[in-house]
Each structure stands twice: as structure tokens, then as C-alpha cells.
Amino acid sequence: MHSERYAPPSFENKIVAPALAAERVRALAQPLVFTNGVFDVLHRGHVTYLAQARAQGASLIVALNSDASTRRLNKGADRPINRLEDRVAVIASLGSVDAVTWFEDDTPLALIRALRPAVLIKGGDWQPDAIVGAADVQGWGGSVHSIPFLHQKSTTALLEVIRKTQ
Image (cartoon, rainbow, N blue to C red):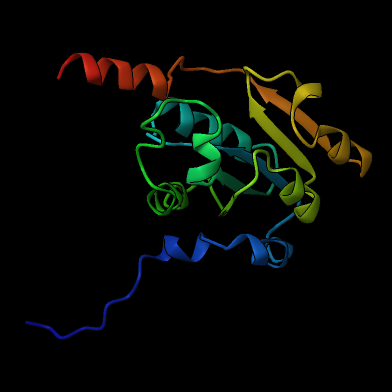
């Protein structure tokens, strides 16, 4: 048996605490794309959306709602299904994601202001002018986009199917 030292998976290097996120994004290729969400039970819709978001710039940072922030969204008493540390690791493992962080507030506005992305993106259920941080990003010359859903998937709907089969 080999006694090799354990090396953490390389994707763990993509995980950055919110307090260090501004410093980290300065080292990423520009323009920086920012998106956020819960990303509780990852599905094809999420993966496709993140790949589309990444294509809008040179780097993608994804900010996740903390567990407490997720609970305040009223997605259900048992949400999130996966704890923040697990959701962060799964998102960080995706090739389309260059960095992942999180936020405790109800919205990522403070984080958006700290990171100053050139591109702000949300899914097709958001109108661009209603996206949190849109006015800020446009104010410093950036752009805001709502990406239409290619795959109509929903974690909430998926969980309903799972619960019915129990």
C-alpha cells in the first residue's frame, strides 16, 4: 500500500470565503461574470445555465445563498436539502465555474458591490431590471442578462416527485 499524502481535490481551490472574494476575483480573467442562487439539488437546468453564464465572460463566480438565507426564501421547511458546504463543493467542481462563494443576507447586493462584476446574470424567470444589483452593475458600465431556460427543471418540482415515490 502506498503512503501518499492526501491532496484535496483541485476544485476546492475554487471555494473562497466572502471576505476574501474581492481579492480572489482580481486574479481571475476579466470580464467577470456573477450569478447567484441556492443550487440545492443540482440538475441539468443548473448545469446548462452555469455554462451559458460562463460563456458571457472570461470568468464566472457563483454566489450561493447560505443555509439561513435559503430558509428565508420560503422554499419549504426542509430546504435546503444539501448544506452550504456540500452545495459549494458541488458547484466548485463544475468546469464552467471559476470561483464560488456565499452570502448570508437575503440578497447578494453587498457581494455584487464588493466584486464589481462586468456581467450580472440570472435565469429566465428574472427580468433584467428586477435583478438585484442591476442598477449598480450598469452604473459602472457592466451589463445585465436574463438567460432563458433551455431545460425546464426545478429542484422544488424534483423534490415533489421524490416525495411522492416514498
